[in-house]
Image 1 (spheres, rainbow, N blue to C red):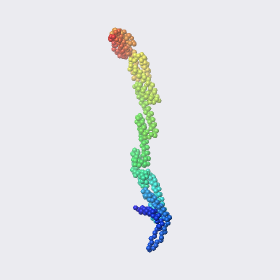
Image 2 (image 1 turned 135 degrees about the vertical axis):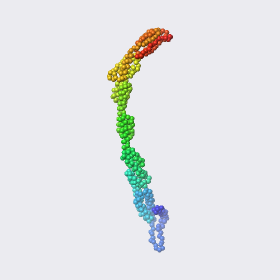
Image 3 (image 1 turned 45 degrees about the vertical axis):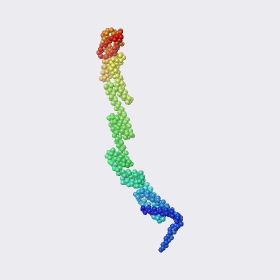
Image 4 (image 1 turned 180 degrees about the vertical axis):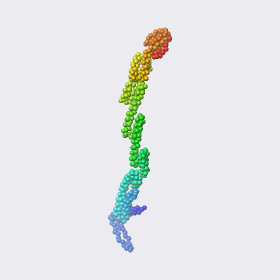
Length: 466
């Protein structure tokens, strides 16, 4: 226990004793003078009850002030006042000591004046503590921003000493402690950035911010380098897209443009590029389809060529060339279909109507050939159709055999009567011949006369009795 604490306890004990004893001795003299056998001392005057009450009041006031002083003094000491307000604090302690001495000398009013003066100084130090805390935090943050490690740590220590539980002081201390490593990463990032190694610079900035995510220089630099990297990657993807587009690699170009859009959705150039891509893709598809249709026409695959032209018109109804080409392809496709139908079923020419239609078809083919459009397939079709028309009208001798007793009729042609052997000239086609004999079952035979073929004899006789 130090001297000041002893003094305080003594004063408090005296006050308590006076408070309880004074009422009992108020009528007794305050002081008693011992007689000196050698010489007598002057008699001390006695205090009146009102004077005693006044002194008691001053003592109580002094004690109340002392209680406030001790609380404030201890609070300031806990906040490290000796580090930031040492001079004023020591002056306050001296005032307290003076007040204590005056108190012991029962000069209570003078003691109260000293105590009040000391308390005023301590309150001023409390205000100074808050101002110093704010100033230390601000100065510490400024030192961190400027990369001044020693100063930042000094201000952080001051702030944490004044307010150990203050969140801002705690954060400042943590940031000041990590500042040396933060600066190492920041300087490395700057070196990489100056050398054009942007990815390495970005990594170092990120490491710095991992230690102190409030380090403004690194945040600003990282934001700038991210923008630079974003622009670089954006331009790289756009360049890739244009390159793919020039090579007619439309899906690759679309993927590149869309990837660029994910990096920066605000870029109008991406929308323009995608719009141009669709236009170029459609133009390319039209070109490819037109080339394919042209090849199909050269190969005289008119039906397929017609389908391509229809697809193109459906793709873009404003296209003129496919519409023009479609007219000729449609005509040629229809003629080709009709010609193939006749050539594949030559016996149909036995029908007069079909024969006349085939002659008209031949005239149309000849008309096309006369227009300087002579293709191998067209000429072949003309030759085959001409030959088929001629053969369809050329009669062939057909031999019929019978038993000389059966009545033979060539249905829808003529009655042949009864014979053993007869020869009839018939044009190619399908025929039916009927044999009839009394007492025997009728016989019906259907046969075909092919174009350009040798026909075997046809036997007609009724042999099954009824």
